[in-house]
Image 1 (spheres, rainbow, N blue to C red):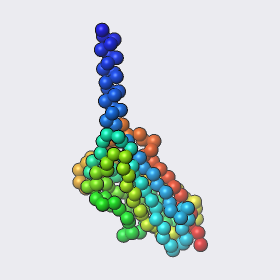
Image 2: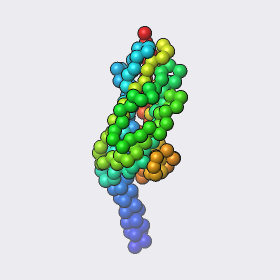
Image 3: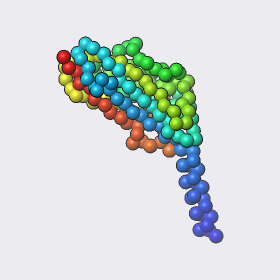
Image 4: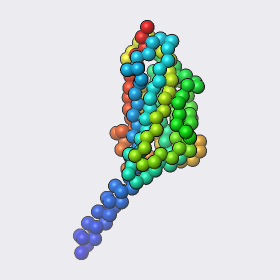
Length: 166
């Protein structure tokens, strides 16, 4: 009797966690095959996906952080293409932090962000790192928070490269 009750409890906990888990995935890619001419600009593409079958991503929950090789490229201050509701939390020294703001991302849905950057100094290829961090769900979305229940940490980091040429 006790073994059966224990088995049922463990099964229900496993079922509950899997039924209501929410994974958020980050993918990044440098457009133009990662090649930018000196003094020219290209876009860096960030895609955030809710792979959950049951749970919507709440407002002010996501804080993607993108780190550029600041010595060789500069992120343009105003040339962002953001989905409706998204905001730029900070843009300093080659590190851009975003927030999903008021945007609630539905099940199996994605958002794409474009960040413009300019080639300043010849070199590369250099790595650009995207890291999905989480907020506490309170505006403006800049405070640290815990990951969603069932999130898979392995798909919260993505990298791409850039090479600055003549």
